[in-house]
Length: 155
Image (cartoon, rainbow, N blue to C red; front, side):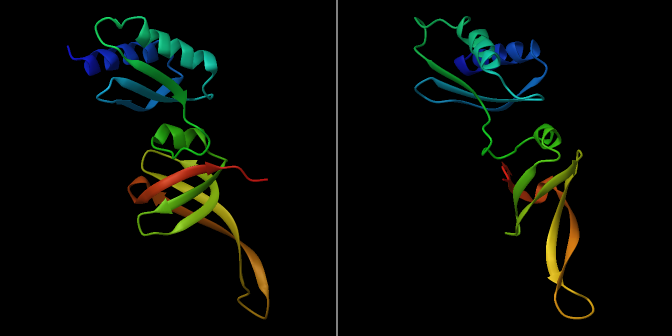
């Protein structure tokens, strides 16, 4: 079994013990630097990161391979990658960049297995008369058309 395969097996075992956590990204460099990024249905605590780190680190031999290990949570500015992340962030503001180059800042109203639904208010010219009116906009975007989506904080 290669080093990478062993790390992935240990990571899967650690995550199996904590079903509320899920893997966002893992990378292992040529110099054996292991970087694991996690997210969770209810967020990720420091204890969660420590538990996953221990699940990997305590079963690898530093005499065999000198490695470094970094386990962290996906930050607020990290792009969303999985459907589960979108579903966990329903009701929050997103900045979505589509594959066509459109940028939309809106509330994530819904997320299912195929698409997300965004909702926002926009000021548009009145259909009759002068001036502008506030209208509610709704747009559905399939995941295949999302280039990047990031949760943003509105004050």
